Length: 277
Image (cartoon, rainbow, N blue to C red; front, side, top):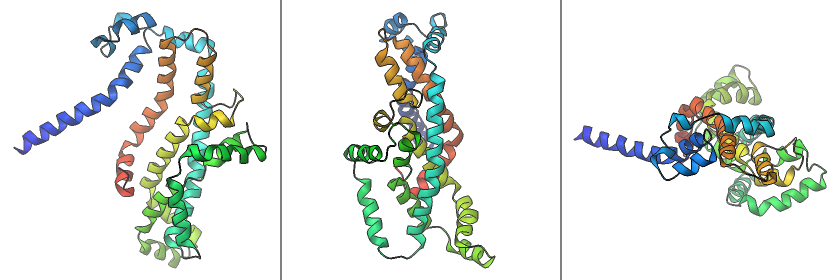
């Protein structure tokens, strides 16, 4: 009976996984077809099972011929990486302070952070734009990156994690002569690697997929991240080919897939530690 239940569970899990993978499979296969073949196969099994005679690299060659997609992909990688590195440092320090230190109005600050978590980005994007514009940082990389370095959700996640961090490790570090800062960077951070990777991946994905703020903050094509650049390119193109769009989206998806494959173990472990559902 136990074997039957286990088998049924794996079958059900595989079907659910396949449901989420089918759009990705269709996108990748469509990027290797011409538009005529895409629409011919769209309501058949061949939309997901390739006929190798229909596949070619023509859409990629044509796409790269009129648009250097890798330039904007590089921009997105740089922006996301900077956001992750700087954001993890600042947000984890804030979470550590809220978890381990005692200072005036600490509880009120925590309540304020929790309250900010329920405010949608759409409600703050216009005031944020006005502030950055007054600082003269619109259409600059610092103006684009600065507003989202500090993330209240990440601060809260780190705070919850550090609440359960063994205080004995910190005390032993202080006995060995480490300062509070030394204990954090030499004991707490290395021991919390799983949590840092999990929050880092969530931050990277949020930066990589962001569209609303980059559209408002950046108008220089050379500075645009890939999501905004693709929108601008296809909006200005008279003949929009589905195969070109699928090829571009496939290239954009590759870094995310690689990131997940490398860190999937840490994602699961970190989600369990932080209580992410």
